[in-house]
Image (cartoon, rainbow, N blue to C red):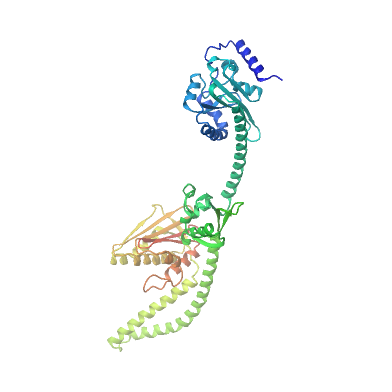
Length: 534
């Protein structure tokens, strides 16, 4: 078996054969371009990151020793150098910089080339180097070949002055190589686990939020971004306790170890794209039973919630329908008779003037009562739409013209914005007009004098949207949640049937009414109708 001294002697003889002058400073024959160097560094990216960590530790441990740590690839090209400025300047003056290649033909006898060739650790001290310019240095190189993780090969070398040479540096470098391989393996396994976790979390149909023990968000998925109304980059690192309505629950999870299951939470206004979720949360413990974070899950039950509410609403309307049918039968018969007799008395020449005035009042009130019964019946059991093809712009303009006198009396400005091209809608024009009158009447009553009402139309291939905006008193969250319920009203003398009737009419047309409102700032009602009959 050939020992190191024999290998050094053999190398020096080859250097003489190459024609190298030991007195001259060695000049590397090969050097990578910046682009080539960058490409090679990309392949070693993770190793460079780990190497930087170990280099920092060694520099701190041996802070009084001039050291230079050098990383090369399998071809001997220097990819990175770590060290103090003094030793860096020394080797830079010798032409040893990032991108050069350590070969025996150009650099003479050197530890990097020998370590790669012999595949074993090598140390060259002082005159063991071929070139005299390197006789004041001690160089140690350990080869690596990481096959279990990244399939990377190369060397890690340590250069110092001959005054600080120490055989223990070889053992130190060997330990660094072993530690780096373990770190790379651990990093690769963690990356796989992290990737798997991210794929699972990202593609789950439920919202997921994970926190650290202090309530700072450490992970979340797209659905969690949606319910928190916040981007992931803004959520990460923020306090979970500041996000309501579930922040208070998360506090109890982390502070007291409580768990929650199937807590129903609402995010936003359910009438306008809000989400209803079932919320679960529990603490995450380590192997010593210490809380290291919290897990929260949100299951979207909006569709089920809306369906249940529709069923409840349908049941209410069914009961109201039966009540309305009986009520109409019991009231309308005597009403018809009373109205008939009053009409006869009105035309009679006998009643006194004062009595005639009273009869006029009774007659008007009876007509109003008859109108109320008709509206109640329509709300409870609306007739099927008598669909026709008509221009919706013309219908809206006609409705605004019909209400123009009311706008003028209250000194309210009404504007209509619409597309130039006609929008043809297949619906019941009388029922749609009734809806528009109901909503415009509500808007008119909500605004003060000199208020504004804006009506706008927009359409695509499938739907038309009629948007009615006002700058009136607006609704609070509680009022907004009940505004479509029968008999709910915010007006002193209102009956709470107008919007209920409108809702049923639009529902029968296969459309929707969406409402947004800010208290004291105004309300927007958006009617969406399909252009063609479904």
